[in-house]
Image 1 (tube, rainbow, N blue to C red):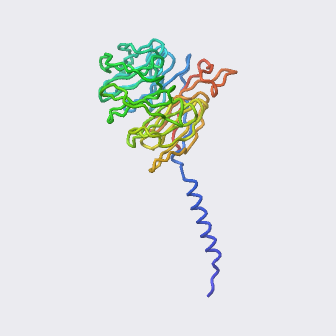
Image 2 (cartoon, helix red, strand yellow):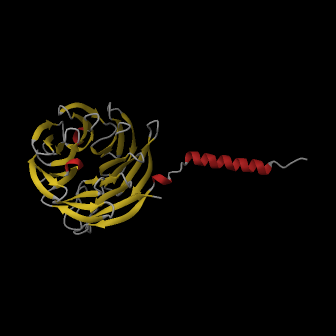
Image 3 (cartoon, rainbow, N blue to C red):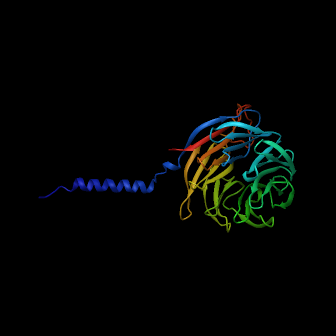
Length: 347
């Protein structure tokens, strides 16, 4: 008996079309981020870096002359650290119970007791300490001094200065690879990443980041030895952290300030003052691809990540009438509008 093959052919054709669509439009539902909530802070002035202490479930938000402390599980303010004039960044040494702030307006770093949130002492640094990090292998703190073109290194426990490193230009953000014994720091006006040996406190390499220019934020993938560098010319290059080779780049927004990498999801983030966060992923072959451009808020250019929940946190203030946070590097901010914006992965 002769059968009609058209329904079968039609079904096969439809199946092939669907397979092709799936191939060119991969399912990325797990990569998509959405707005969760806003944590109001208020007060005068804006903020700079945000830092998570995942073990203690705390978020430290720098805010003008203080650090606001937020409970990561409750997403609410639980305290503050005072007397940090012109603060830029905050680093933590969980095993020591200490925190460290870079106080740009007084050229000092504060050493803070994380249990009481009280300042124990202050350390003299170079002019305008900006980025700050804790290096766990040698239990030292590095401040990167924006106007001095230098890094100040001191013992985390005692505050004793152990070295001052001359840098080739204006340092911005830095990250550490403890196993490699290296610190990587962006030199904004030289368009390069400078590499510091943590054992000798010496600069051991200078890596150009072209096609990137004016590097600001930086994040590191320790497992795959990759650096993600947020650049002022709307690019995020990915570098090999062992050789400095630029492996690729993706476009990002305007006024980038912070980058983060989530080892649990393999996602890299670049937060920009134009109110966007670019979210990208590197595949097994090392190709970097944008998976989402998340809309946030104008001026929300500083960011951190909670690796436990995969949430990202950004601080921002609302613009005064007639000011444009998305276009100005130093916009006029509406008093009392400072807040933290929380975004989570879609479920």
